[in-house]
Image 1 (spheres, one colour):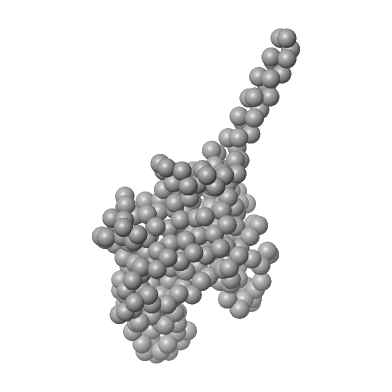
Image 2 (cartoon, rainbow, N blue to C red):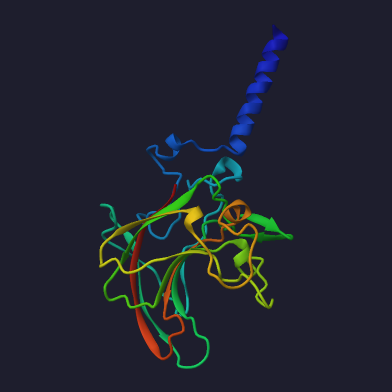
Length: 257
């Protein structure tokens, strides 16, 4: 009897340890009340990523150290928290500015809104790399509102991965004759007439541009899905010379599914 009890206790402890290491969250868990483990950021508390966001292959299966949300690109525009938000929520984020393209040279200036989800990630070649493992999920969705005064020539939501990003947070060699740099998995969007629109994107639907070097795997799956550098919305003039474009859009309720 004592031996059986010890065996059961050891088996139970083993099961608990395994569960804490890498649990595949069931759909019922993802839709439960309380902190939503599939929500990246809803802007109700500012530019703060949900610390309860689920992440595969991390301690406790949630994001360890959240990244710092920012506005980057050229010019650099600060994202603003405004009210109201989408889907009857209180707040959202607003990105608003102008981009001028000079008359000479290759100029792809753009206003970008970037979300580096994970600021701890993994170690690569002895150095920390801030990547997020989204393999618990099959896609991403968010609310988008593009105003009628937005005249950007190109508008894109993209997911850069390790292979398409340059160091220190990527492995792409920008000096190579043919490279995959800045060519992440993307979705092109248009104006929404100043109305909120729900954008729902299975990872399998997102593709890279038809230029530069190939990567393995070629889809947003496998290693690419485990090495997401961040989320990015980008609008600009797409090298249209001597042109100024207006950028005016809102984003809210960014969530994996």
